[in-house]
Every structure is written in C-alpha cells, then in structure tokens.
Length: 260
Image (cartoon, rainbow, N blue to C red; front, side, top):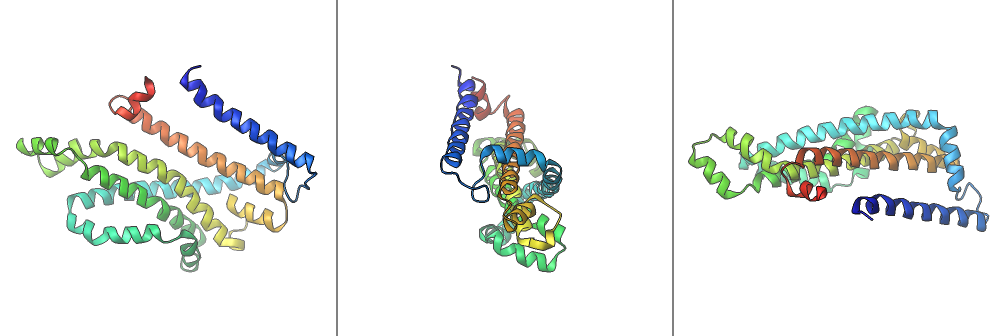
C-alpha cells in the first residue's frame, strides 16, 4: 500500500474502532443518554439541531478568523520591527512572553468587564494566537544564513532590500508554521472567552451552546457541539497546512519530501 493510502486509511480505521467500542460500551452497560450518549444518538442530535448548532458555529468561526487575521498581521509586523530595531525587541519582547504565559481563562473575565462581549472574545482569540506568529517569524528573520547576508551587504543592498529579498523569503517556513499553530489557538481563545461570558453570551457562539447543554443535562447536544468544534479545528489546520504546502512545494525541503 502507498504511504498516502496508509496516512488516510489508518486514522479512519482507528476512528471506526473507537466509535464501535463507544457504541458497544453504551449498549452493553445500558448507560443512560444523560450520562454518556451513544454515537448514533449524537449523530441524530447533530442532524436534528443542525440549524441552531451551525448558526452558533458560524459565530464562533467568525470570531476565530477575525482573531487569527489580527494575530497574523500583527505578529508578522512586530516581528519585522523586532528584527530591524533590536532595541524595540529588547524592550517589548518580554511583555509578549508575559502575555503568552498568562492563562487565558484568567484574562477572559477581566476583558469581559472592560470591553463589549464581541471585542472581549476577539481579544482572547488574538492573545493566544499572536505569540506563535511573533515568535516563529522573529526566529526565522534572525536565522538567515550569514553568508547570504554578507553577500547582500557586499553588493550594497539596502536594509529594506535585504528584508524583502532575503529575510522574509528565508523566514517563510517558520512564519507558516506559526500560522498553523495560531489557527487552532485562535479557536481555543474564542471558545474560552465564550464560556467565560456565561449567560452574557446567550444566543451567540457554539461554546455557549455547550455550556447551556451542560446546565440542561442535554448531553447529546453537548457532544454534537463538541464534534462540530473538533471538526472546525481540523478543517482550520488542514486549510493552513494546504496553504503552507502550496507556498513551499517548489523550493523548500519540507514540502518537496512530501511529493517523493
């Protein structure tokens, strides 16, 4: 079997085995649906509540994409600033680290006090997604081959020519890796903020639907919402991975190996 067939078939096989084991456990031990619903009940609930759940998913994905775009643009811009002016990097990079290591569950309630709900959720999505883009892009810009840098300086290239023609292309793999990480983290930040919003987020995102289902012991709907969130995260990752592959496939070793 080809490697591509194995990479597709084996995860599907594992998923099928897990679903079968889940169904057998629920049926064998007669577990009630409010404790652990079976996969069939979760699927039927997902279909029955599709209108409500997909509307909430759209709200969550909108906030996720907005936070991701802000993190991507801001992270790359600040990485360029840090690379060009080391004094700025030394002054502000430690605060970016502090922002990253502070748990978002502790920041979200504070943001909800001072900001409108939409902006607070957006800020949480941006906070957790910003640092991976900043750190990876900064590392890529600072890791340019010194021999190539000396060659550009020998030909009297300006600072901006070096940045545009050498540093940014060389940093592209690290930048794209940071974006792949940031995509999933922005979804996590949006979900955490929506849960922290509690009743203030009534009628909004999918995370609120999960909390609401838990309060009402509607466990099948909670599982259905969790399935949608997981699928959204997987789609985000694969979309960003595909973008990375398309950008790098003609010249970078990590993408060329996938075609062999």
